[in-house]
Length: 278
Image (cartoon, rainbow, N blue to C red):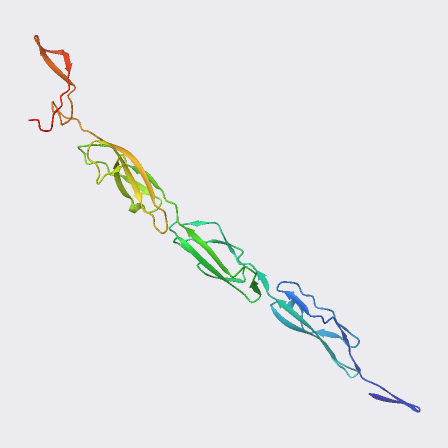
């Protein structure tokens, strides 16, 4: 305060106090939303702000301070604005496609995975079953309603099939053909069985007739079983010379006429040899 003497009168000038004019309404935003700080003015001096809007990024509550510095002629002033940034709600990722068992390690295709998510859990799998992937968020995000940060995916039991089942025909005097086949899964475990009609045989057949070979591979936890069938024939072998086997017939017999054996005269007869014939 200065006293001024002008003749008989004295007066003083009182030190003023600056007044900052600014909208101090609290600001509430969600992470990622743009923030604009209010503009401040003062009747004295220059208003400075301790915070830039670009600095208000992460979740939290901030106090923005507006200040006018005091001088010899006026007192300083301060105003504050509260800024709160809330977490952004997000949905958990999802698994696309289906994954049948292949025998190899598989990695699922994930959609919706973001850089702010940390992945853990069963991110790979080989055997048929259900797997769980977990996601952890950073401090600026939270799970939306209905999301909990876990994603399940499945490797399904594979379908199976037997291919290229082969077996040759053979004569009843031969050792016989060995069946072969391949399979999508379990080819080394294919088992073969033999059938006469609908009846399963105890062993590989050796007598003449029509048969079926059945190839079968059992299912496991990773793949289903499979079967395939193929028909084959065991032929009766030809008898040599005049031999007649049990149950067989000799179709043509030459007979002697009064003029001797005539090769042009033939008589068809059926000769059945019984098992106890001498």
